Image 1 (cartoon, helix red, strand yellow):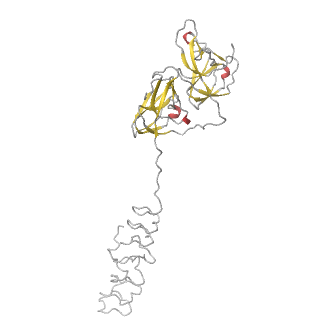
Image 2: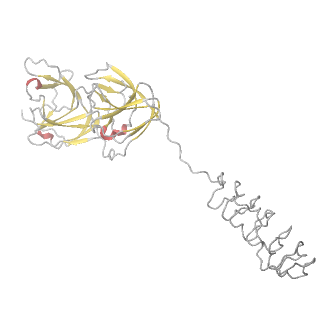
Image 3: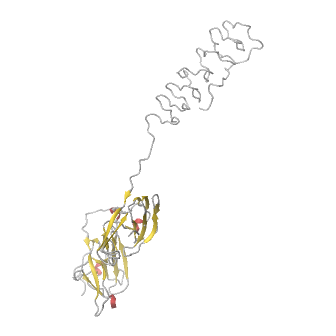
Length: 409
């Protein structure tokens, strides 16, 4: 019954910082014995053994070896990178060495292109393409596995039962903590596949595998209302169904799903545990002479005969007396002592009637599990009844401030 490194650090040689070139010609062949040239570098031969004391050559670096004691100011030598050791005091200014990374100390600003520094991660910036050793990449744990649908059985316990004595379907079974419903028409359902609308609005449903259909409806309807048919990868947001309806997700074949329910304002169970009071299957029989109308069926909470009425005191074919299945009289019509009685639904679907005895007008309040209602009679109302929809297989309630009192004959 399915309802559905960019620069070129080695190729360009910057000039040594110098002063003013010699006015005319360089020395003929021999460098000055001890003094640096006045302005122009030697034509082809570096100084004979002593580097210039403080000023590097004006245009051309020494031909083969870097200056013995003083590194070039901020710029590495043109052709040969430092042999395995970074400059003594100042790291390369913003540009990594051309071919060989520094042995132990990362460059000041830019990591070596492609190769992480040996032993020490770059400060603040990870090496391109490779995480720093020892630090795992941050990630999100995988989602929990999707939930599998269940095969549920509907067993006829009342009337009507339009799908026969028994039926089955694949369905999404809602968490029991959500006050689910397991009755539909005259059927008792083996699991809580109906979620009250007051809780269902705001729910997100997604199908992982298979196909399923989302429905809403009332527990006393034999035709549910289609909302969506979802295939693998589809999602649906529930919104706008009546609070006193129910939501279900059903299919002809197994499926898997995920659900996300909105936050609950229900504080959860508290106080001492309660003992639910079960309803009794009931039959409303026409009690006028010659009346042959069929019985109404449902379930009620009965009271002692001295505290409640068996009949509704209505007129014509609406005049009914209430009996159990074996013909025992039931007394479900409470007197005015019902005022202030607090009813909490524990299972099934509950209907609270507040009315004036004998009339055809009343106020009805529907309760799903974990919902409560306090009877508040409004004049001329003088009675109440705890029942459910016609054909329901039953419900249970817990009661507070419901002390039966004698009624007038």
